Image (cartoon, rainbow, N blue to C red; front, side, top):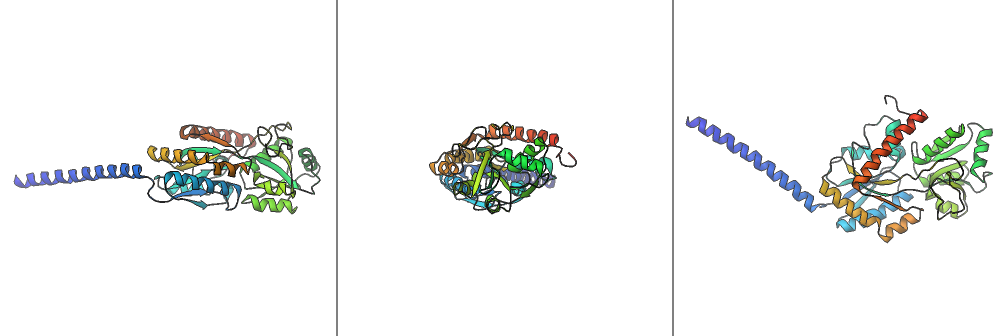
Length: 331
């Protein structure tokens, strides 16, 4: 009898220890959230160092770090059309110490290629920041002075026009694919990892045409490249002489909004802290001046609205690739 009593007492004590351990763990977790961040935060940027996005993300990270009173470290992960951060984000702990810039191509590539990650399932939306101005550029000595010149040449030289973009599945690539598909034309697509390398190739006439974000600005302003048109909903304030593709009657608008996300299942208190820090940072004059260099404007969305737009964008990309017959095998 005494032995049974001792056994029950022992089991009760063990259960109590487990309960106490669980309680301490919960308290510790809550305490960790309340003290977040206690160490440097890594912001994955899926583009090469030295490009327009890299520069603006570094300024944003610096300002956000000030508001969080903690260092934010940029880690460049270029390649694969801007999707190289996704596998790392998928494997990261949802503790707020690993974040990523989320570019538009992830929604397209997840619908056209077999990948192990999902841009909706594997992320926690934090904030939408801005979008890009994209344009079509040609060498300064190019015979193409208008988009019509380019299209007419492609029509009379099927499959010979060489066009560079910053990667397979990126917005410049998909915008050009849509344009050429609508016109019934073929061309040679040449993908690059970053803007600078691609612009050098166009300026030196290795490529006939380049399509990219306004990282091409220094080349256009120095006279090495000619800007034929932009892809915005309205003309660029910086280059008001360049017509939009919409204005030309070609029906294509592309601005590729981007934001900041973390791994899935991040605690709400940490999401709020990060959102507030990035929202303050994006409105700092240093960040506004930096994105202004690339003809970008703020395009803010909070966590909930950003998540909704991400889901809508993913669904829209699915419809788009189905229409073009580009859906990945197995979809």
